[in-house]
Structure formats: C-alpha cells, structure tokens
Image (cartoon, rainbow, N blue to C red; front, side, top):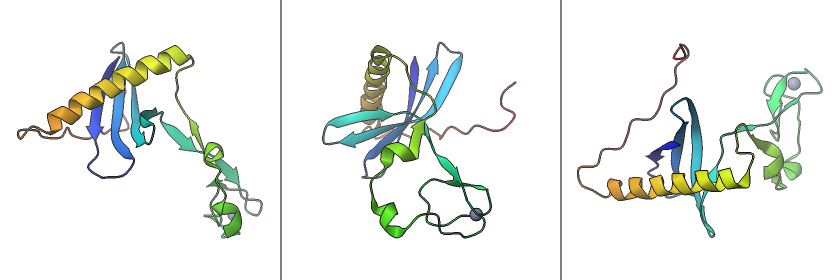
Amino acid sequence: MRPSIRKTAGQNRLKAFCSITLDDEFAIHELRILTSARGLSIVMPDLRRRERCSQCGRGNPVRVRFCNHCGLELASEEFLQRPHDDLIYFDIVHPLKMSVRQYMTNVILEAYEQALQLSQEPTYTPPEPIIIRRGDAA
Ligand SMILES: [Zn+2]
C-alpha cells in the first residue's frame, strides 16, 4: 500500500487528505486525517445519504431544511439541531477486517508524520492536488 499525503493549511480538525494505491493497481482518494482529543484518526471516503421529497419526488441530501427543487420544508429547525452524524454519511469504501484497518491507519499516519516533517524544511513545496478527469481511465 502506497500512501500520498496532502497536508491542509488550516487549524481545524482536518489535518490532511490522503490517497492510497493498492498493489500499484487500485487507487482510493479523499481519505481524511483528523485530529481529536484521542489523537489522529483516518476517515474513509464517504457520501451524504439522500432522500426523496414527498412533494416533487426528487432527491435531496438528508437533513436539509428545504427541498432543493420545489422548496417544500423537509425538516424543522429543531430536528436539524439534533445530532445524527452516523445517519447522514456512509463510507463508500472501507476495510472489512479490523486488522486491515489498523494496518492502513499505521501506514497512513506514518506517511503523514513524514509529510509533516518534510513540510518544516525551507525548500518544501506542497504537492499538487490530485485531479481526476473524466476519461482518465483507459
Ligand atoms: Zn421537492
């Protein structure tokens, strides 16, 4: 597994984005490295769940106040204040075994620490963001 780290400049919980290449044959982008009171952790690429509007039938991200298409109120302000993080997003790729998750975490955090050290050097230039274009697959 070959990780590639893109460190973020901000002072928020998000410390870096990471891409990994598996066996030089399969790439996964947009893993995130977050910090919390418990230390650094890896978040898998995820998507926000969607739901259909009862009036127009078109899809909207869950937990939006109004339908993006017809304007119907989908959720009250009070409902939106309640925490539901686990219901909003779902991982689109993830390891199936805890041992694989631990291995990935170790390799990625080691690469992050190396990138962090490199970024302290005066000659450091941050890597270009990875851009995936339609048609890149051949
Ligand atoms: Zn609607």
